[in-house]
Image (cartoon, rainbow, N blue to C red):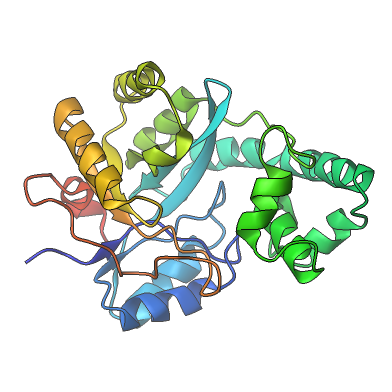
Amino acid sequence: MTLNADLHCHSVVSDGTLSPEQLAARAAGNGVELWSLTDHDELGGQERARTAAQANGLRYLTGCEISVTYLDRTVHIVGLGFDADDDTIRQGLRATRGGRELRAREMAEQLAKVGIHGAYDGALRYVGNPELISRTHFARFLVESGVCRDTGEVFRRYLTEGKPGFVPHRWATLKDAVTWITRAGGQAVIAHPARYGFSANEEFALFTDFKGHGGGAVEVVTGSHSAADAERYADAAREWGLAASRGSDFHSPDESHTDLGRLPDLPRDLRPVWDLLADRIQ
């Protein structure tokens, strides 16, 4: 019997809308057996998540989703099972968070030029942690203020490359992110690889460098992957000798297409990433 593991979701500590405690209860209610909270570039919810997981009968792995700049694009690397008190990863994440406020103010300036005023203060209303203000918070403001019908429309019209409101940010390097995770005893995972739009050569480079830096797994089954995507990255896991991860990337009951724990199983021939982390499960 396969394990219902959900190892990718977000709380109000980054850009989700539920607390760690609410997420733990929702995961348990949906039959999740092994859970991880993976807030963006932030470990502030880990102790709450672990405590809530135990209260709800869930096994728990520490988690984080680290923003990386690779080939001039933002790529996400999920860390699982690391020591959340490790100084190196904490300092690295603090530095990664540091550029978000400046970027957010530049985004607000760009939006003001196309007639959308007050976006910075508006986005702040949706931020649980001001250090982690992001495009998602701007999107919620633009929906609430009636500029767009939903967050998808916001991204299409305003917050992607080439649109007013898009401001690039230089994140951690791929090597940094993988090294922080592995030196703290965890496993590094390429998150939702189908989302990046890399060419075959670019994706080959990503997997080559990730594996070379010590990365151990790829997210095969995730909320934004189609069945064909899952099959494609199952093949990639086999080809590159990587373990497979599974996570909904759940952010909000109102915004996420896939609920916690409501995912297809991993292919049976793949090694689940949690097998590599058996001694890290709490």
